[in-house]
Length: 286
Figure 1 (cartoon, rainbow, N blue to C red):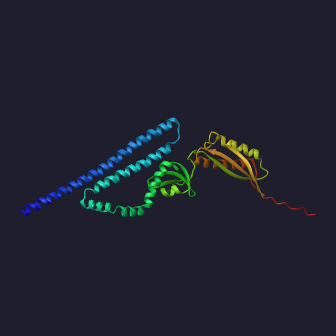
Figure 2 (cartoon, rainbow, N blue to C red):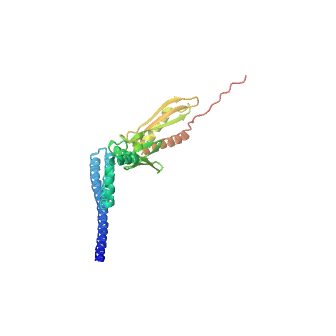
Figure 3 (cartoon, one colour):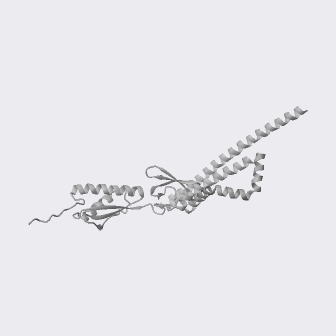
């Protein structure tokens, strides 16, 4: 009799264990499939909205992409968290732990809040970035003297890809509270400034014509063909010229400035115009 009871108990335990393993597998499978479905639906919705914006010639596609990315990450995190809670409910020991934590919810809430302060602030920072839009995906920014593009905005951090292909990972709570220079938040076009020191014997009008010719044929310049040359200062050795040009974005502005410098140096050599020279005057000996 005792052997029969023990045998039935062992069968029941095995059945219970198998049942829990099966339920656990189903929970994980449903969570993964559900996150994939949500990701696909949100991506399709995002693609349709962006396509409509581009077709209408409206700005704001980057802002929508940023918001949808953050929303997708929040939904995915919520699904996995809910699945984890359901998974724990299968085990009787975990239910007792949950009841004990619930009875001391006040103390546990304070402790968890203090321990997860940075984590929660990063998550809240990510949500703030997605809606207030101080930066968006593909924005050109300067953060702590580092120039780069916003490559990814996650719940916890933002990744900036620098001009030399490095990655700067910035926690969202720091990004929200720091001053960041955004070059593309309203208008991506930029004015390029070139300072040039030339000799007093140089013909400024000729330099103006050269700059206009360079800008007129440059692929880096905007259709406005901005090419302004001004004498902004005198020194004891030279005149100081400021050359202004305009490009559609930061990389083209950099390339345009380099192009103007290179071609001006070439023109100076062809025309034989002097760069700043040091002159020494000697009194005649009687």
